[in-house]
Length: 121
Image (cartoon, rainbow, N blue to C red; front, side, top):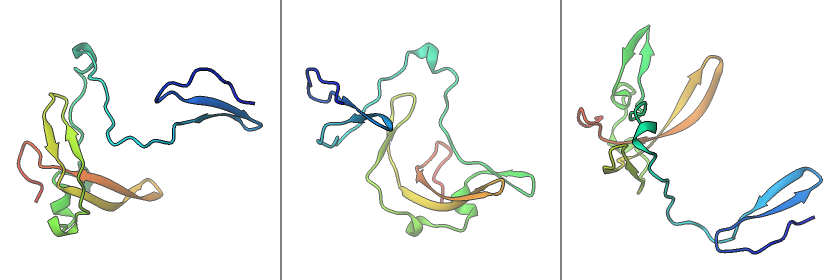
């Protein structure tokens, strides 16, 4: 069963199957994704995310260097990131690592950027 109505550009249509409702999105692909900036009172708790690991119980930052990786190990990326203050930075690339949490290990990709303290290398 299909729920029909007017279908403006970018509007989704809900289709109902025996397994539940599934949104049917337009076939066009977005070339850019934009998020609205939240009001200031909603951002006081936000800060840039960064990786800090503990090795033998001691905190370690600048993980790319600690993993003996270099700029040649990065996967090229044309992604730009926007900081919470509205500044835009070009990423240096992606790095893929095996990330273990407890007994589970997953391959994870991270965007690498130059931080305010200087480059990661």
